[in-house]
Amino acid sequence: MSCLLSCCTSLTCGLCTSVASGISKKSARLAYCGIFGLSLIVSWVLREVAAPLLKKLPWISSSDTHSKEWYQIQAVLRVSLGNFLFFAIFALIMIGVKDQNDKRDSWHHGGWIAKMVIWLVLVVLMFFVPNVVISIYGTLSKFGAGLFLLVQVVILLDFTHSWNDAWVEKDEQKWYVALLAISVVCYLAAFTFLGILFIWFNPSGHDCGLNIFFIVMTMILAFAFAVVALHPAVNGSLLPASVISVYCAYVCYTALSSEPRDYVCNGLHNKSKAVSTSTLVLGMLTTVLSVLYSAVRAGSSKTFLSPPSSPRSSAGKKPLLEAEELEEGKEKKKEAEARPVNYSYSFFHAIFALASMYSAMLLSGWTSSSENSELIDVGWTSVWVRICTEWVTAALYVWTLVAPLLFPDREFF
Image 1 (cartoon, rainbow, N blue to C red):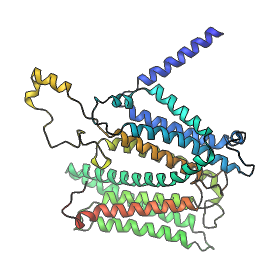
Image 2 (image 1 turned 180 degrees about the vertical axis):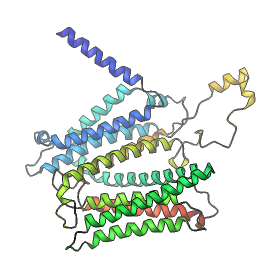
Image 3 (image 1 turned 90 degrees about the vertical axis):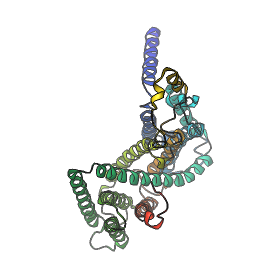
Image 4 (image 1 turned 90 degrees about the horizontal axis):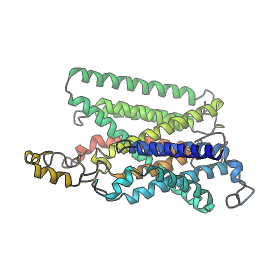
């Protein structure tokens, strides 16, 4: 039996080692995203099952008056804090890394078994810290989550403009037709969806002025996007306006679906658990994808703080290859020179740290324990956070259109 256990242990270690060694520099970002996704799964599971266990820990269960919801929030915040510290520590360590000769470059891309152990240790240790530390982290997470939502908006704006510019640069009629077709479809989808929201969140016989205000305001913003983008002085495009309109309609829906289930204007109260779970899953997928995309964009755009020495930031300032460098002596010299990193490692980890805060708020209902424990991300705090996110998105998009007119002497990326 002992021999069998020894063989199983050896095989397990060998498997982990092979998986970790198989993570190349190109897949390192995916590996970090995997760690982040694992933290979401652990938070979600512990939220459902850890309450009875936390009640038995005297340094956590200091009072018999705590509700089940309070313990669920504690479990989520403690896992989130461990995950936040993991990425925050790496963000601080990676400050100033500019080339691949820096030994910290190998820390970023390698040592995956050690990283997994460090992550696990940090998460476990968070269940031994005092409640006051978790309370402070819960408060700070609200601001960190708001900052992450702002980053998401910037990412979305950068994506829509990059998509539009890529197709316009092709300068072919079929691509212009495709731009127009997608724009029309997006606008039809946005207004159709907003019309459905009128039915769901404005039941007859009730005064639902607030919900009507949210929906009508979203419609006005979507129409305003098109008007501003198509104005001759702006030189905008309909595609970014249509995509932002769809996003605002979705954010409006998530805000309305987060209203308390006893609110008479919430037409989804009869399907509360199903809606909450589907909204959570979609929110988690959006979070993971946006974090991964932000990491990719960090290495290809000045907007996301690429190092000054990165290839993209220096493109156009000097030739990529000189003919003389093909000589043997110059070739050796070139190999000895430091190769710049492709993206900011520090910013990369900072995005994950902020995402850890956002995911904690998503799972804990913004640390509000007033709602049913079976519901996720429900309450007036969630409603207003999302509505404000929609309005900030609209303001930033309009700003990207009018800023070149207001400041013609400045260059905008």
